[in-house]
Image (cartoon, rainbow, N blue to C red):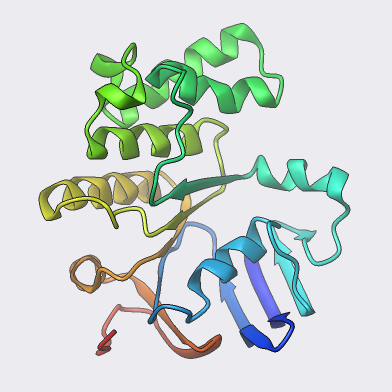
Length: 227
């Protein structure tokens, strides 16, 4: 589903990603770990075409993202869902409208939007809060809504950049369980995180980065790393 072929990303004198090659299959759950500046966020930005590689090739679902024209990027992103640490919800829209927004952008029909939004609200357990605005929600509820928005377009892959960084341990556990539920339904999940307790509990594939380099790739989540 996703392949990096000798990918390097350079910002002037800084090498953010240093000659990384890796493959991620359909339906995998993969954690990216490493200290600040390791390249975790850059890796996700390269996949979403927010950034382009300096060298190498990135293949996603049969599409070459490396030199993709700007007008082709939206087509690739419709197959992706992105979740951020700070939620990035639209403050003037309710929960259901935040989720529906992703569908309206791609021109989905009114019937499709209603059906899919109701389905997603149930998945993220936010149907009882669908008419609430972001400021009326707890941090965990806002992140659930953000995950719902990421799920709206039936993505093949969800990328999460420190999605539990602002949440307490109890809420973190429920959010990670939600990602696990999404993954079990067949969606590939890529998560950049500093929370090693979550990583150890999940026992999923762990890719460790440091200074832009791939340090280790453990399929069973068995690793020892001090950040």
